[in-house]
Length: 114
Image (cartoon, rainbow, N blue to C red; front, side, top):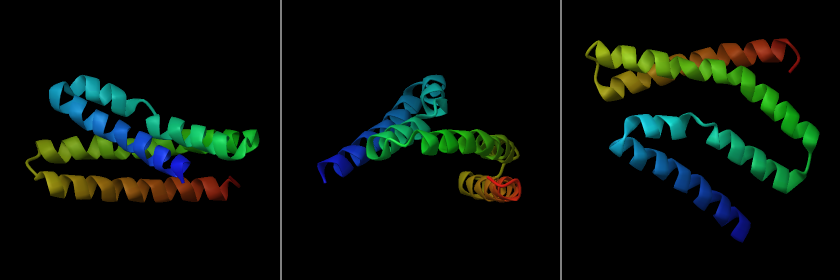
């Protein structure tokens, strides 16, 4: 149970650190957010829990292909905000576009036998 609480605490701490840093200096917050912290944490937790190298390799390879669809949000959201759409609408439409592109990406990965 202590391990699970530690996982939650470390993960939450990183999210809070990004948000607080971004309030003070957006570039520094962006650098911290752009580092694949969630992926690194997931890899650490997966390794600690399984010691399965092959599973980590598959996970890492799958992440590589799914990073591309995730960029959709960062392209669509600012365009919508700059066009005058409000934050919540821009975020919702950006996330919707991202989900659609993720669906295409996952579909292609499954079709390729991943």
